Every structure is written in C-alpha cells, then in structure tokens.
Image 1 (cartoon, rainbow, N blue to C red):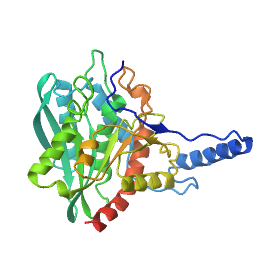
Image 2: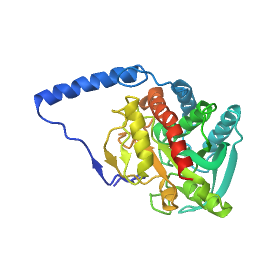
Image 3: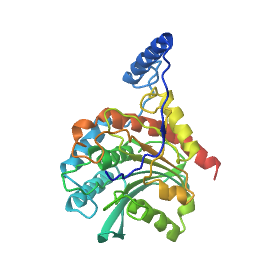
Image 4: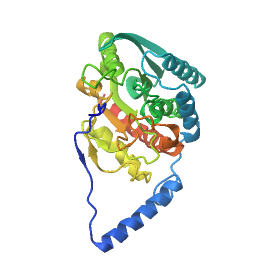
Length: 321
C-alpha cells in the first residue's frame, strides 16, 4: 500500500447535467473564462495587474530541481537553502535561519526553517509559507511540484510584494521537514511547522501571527486547487472570491478536499490558516514529479490570486486586531 503524506479523506465534485442545452452553455462559459484568463484578468478581459513574474519563479524552480533530491539534512537541501537565502537578500530582505534538531524515527536530524520579514506599520503578521524539502525515497525524487514549486513561488512573492502597500507585517516562511522520514503520522511529519509554532509560543509572539497562507504542490500544469475543508473559512472566502474575480474558476473550483499539511499545527494553535494545494496530481511521490509536469503559468496564477487578495486579508487582520 502506498504511503500517503497528505491524506485525501473527502472530496466532492460537481455533477454535470445531462441536459444538452446546459452542456452547451457550460462549454460557452469555459470559452469565455479561458479567454479572460489568457488576457490575464477576468472573463470580461479587464486586466488586474500583478507584478508576480511566473517566468522568474520558474527559473527559481529550475535551479532548485537542479540540486536533485532534497530531503531534510541532505547536502542538496543545504545548497537549496543557500540559494534561497541569497535570493532573499537580493530582494532586500534579511533572512533568518531557525535551526533545530528533530526527533525522527531514524534518530535526531538537523533541520532549518528560513524566515524573512517585511515590516509593516503594525506588528501583526500575515505569513506566506511553504516547504522546501523533498521526500526521501530509494529513487531519484526531485519534487518539482512537491517541494520545489512552493519554495520557488515564495521567492517570487518576496520580490513581487516589495512595493505592496499593506498595514501589517508580511513574513515569508520556508519550512523544512514537511515530509515524513518514514511514514506520515502526527509525529513523523511537518517538523518545520510544528517547530515554528513552538518557537513563537516560547517567544510569546504567536498571538501576533494573525493569518497564514500555505502553498504546496502548486506547480502542476493542470492546476486544480480545491478548498481545503479544515482551513479557516474567511481566508478561503477571500481567496476563492479573488480567484473567480480574476477568471481563475477552473484553477480554483468550488470543490472540497481535506488534506493534512503544514497548516495543521497553526490551526491547532488557534491561528487562521489556509492551505492552497493541488492534490489532484498523478505524479505525487513518484520519479515523474519533474519540471516538465509544471509550468510558469500555474505559479503565476497562484501568485496573482494571493497578491491581489493580500490587501483584503490585511484589512480583515487590521479590523480584528
């Protein structure tokens, strides 16, 4: 039986009517939406600018995948970390390394989260997060979408948000040790996010973290991000309304999916959090999770949605201070 890292426990899909006329109408809607997305905006073709550069994010993804398999504690992950730190510094940020020792089924393992902060007028924090490690297999698993896409996306968001006007502090969190060392359990998984929550509790700063947007496996060419059912409802509402307003209905369908991922430790600690994940990915945890299964466009779609939604998230955080 295949080991599942992110367990899919429930998924509902819309049922298409067999009525011929409804099918024709649906086809027409798809054409209209596709036209709007091609133009980079809504179905009506009104462009909503986003500085997120999908090609630049994909170049980061190529670089990270080029390091090869990147499980926690590996030399390849150390090279990835050095690259991420260097790119964050180029973006004018001061990356911080949170080093810790995780107790795994294979013994103690050194892991390192990377954080970078862009201070706002308020100390309350909105975090954008994703993992940068890959699962350790007995085959060459380079994790283009699972591990690579989230790290590349975060790097480009760090650049793209440099001039974004929001009140609250924006934090970028690259999490280590999301993958299970052996088999996914509550204790053998999400080491980096569990540590980050504990670190904030010890520092007395957890209450400043008001919202967390997690991305994972968002590089899939055939992007399909369902609403993760455990995620905070108000965050999902803002993000899905934004996505549909931009014409990204196909990429952000109104379907439900329950996934165990790095957002769970934050939810358990009382932090509003949402997981943007495309788990409808046939190459998950296989040697075929390679660059050719991913695209710059998918990275940009998620970048456009989150960038455009951030001011509304910021407003909500400010109002509920």
